[in-house]
Length: 261
Image (cartoon, rainbow, N blue to C red; front, side, top):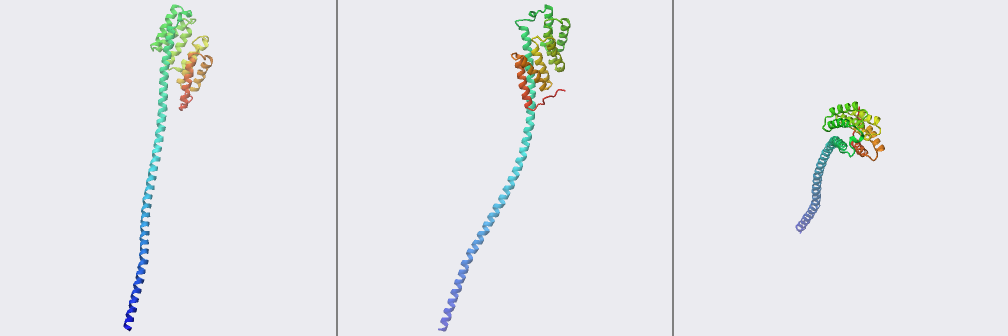
C-alpha cells in the first residue's frame, strides 16, 4: 500500500513536472516566434533602408547630373542666342543693302521714265547728255567714274537745272562705295545749296542711312525723324519709318546705340 501511494505520488509528480514543462514550452514558443518575427522585421527594415539610401544617392547623382546639364544647356542657348542675334543683324544688314540697291534703281528708273524728263527742267541738250552719261556710270556700278563725271558736270554747269540731281547722285555714288562720312557731307550740299529741290528729302534720308551703316543708330534716327516730320507724305518718309523700326529691333536685340568713331 505504501508502495502504491509512493508510486501514485511519483506519478502525480511526474505529471505535474510534465505539465510544467509543457507550460514552459508553450510560453517559450511564442517568445521564440516573436523574436524571429522581430528579427525578420529588422532585417526587412534594414534592407529597405539600404535600398532607400541607395535610391537617394542615385537621385542625388541624377540631380547633380541634371544641374550640370542645365548649366550646359543654359550656356549653349546663351551662345546660340548671341550667334542668332549676330546672324539676324548680319541678315538685316544684307537685306538693307539689297533694299537700297532696289531703291537706287527705282530712283534712276523714275528719272529715266519720268513724264517730266530732265529736259523739261530747262536743261540744254548737252547738259542732259552729260548728266545721263554720269548717271549711267552709277547704274552700271562704276561709282568712282560716276563721281568724277558728276564733279565735271557741276564744274561745267554750276547753274544747270540738273545740278541738284548731279549733287545728289554724287552722294549716292559715295554711299555705294561705303564712304559714309564724305557721303553725308555731299548730301548736306543738296540740302544747303538746293533747299527747294525734290532731292532734299532723299538727301536727308540717305544721311540717316549713312549713320545707320556706321551703326550710329541714335544719330540716324534724328535724320530719319526729320524726314518723317518735314516730308510726311513722301516715299522717303515711308522708308524712314521702316528704317527706324529696324533700328529699334536691332537695339532690342542688344546692338550698341552708337559705334561710330
